[in-house]
Image (tube, rainbow, N blue to C red; front, side, top):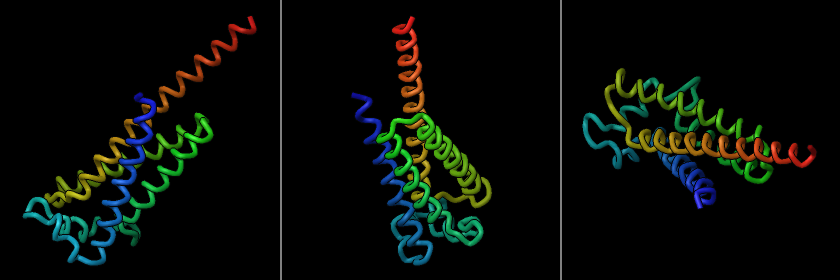
Amino acid sequence: MIKKIVPIVIFLAAIAGVIVSAYALAAHYDSKLYGVCSINETFDCSSVNSSVYADIFGIPVAGIGVAGYLLLAVVYTLFLLKKKIVIVQVAVTMAFGALIFSLYLSGIEMFVLQKWCLLCIISQISILIIFTLLLLEYYRFNKFLVEAQKNSKENFD
């Protein structure tokens, strides 16, 4: 049962990540779209997404998020189709990098800007879910490979 739910949850989290990142990207260029998540002085997506930290080398962080979630979904789909350990290792590594980047951005929100973006929080939760479940997939698939190798050795002995 869990084996069937994990891919669905990973894809739903990736879709949520794409949606909130795409909305944040659109709002990055049209500040009128922030009405939904600029609630008060503390929760203010507009301030966060228009700060100097909202772009990296001229690329909006939200755009990086859209691309990252889409790429993770593609790599995970390849894993589901090919069942190669190296593919899930790549996906876990990508998700770990995204999680570290997300924690860095959270640190900026908390300590530098002292404001929170609800869209960013949803994205952070999405990448945490994806990373955790991909790690589970990696360990489960690795265990399966070890067992299969052990069984094939026993058959030849």
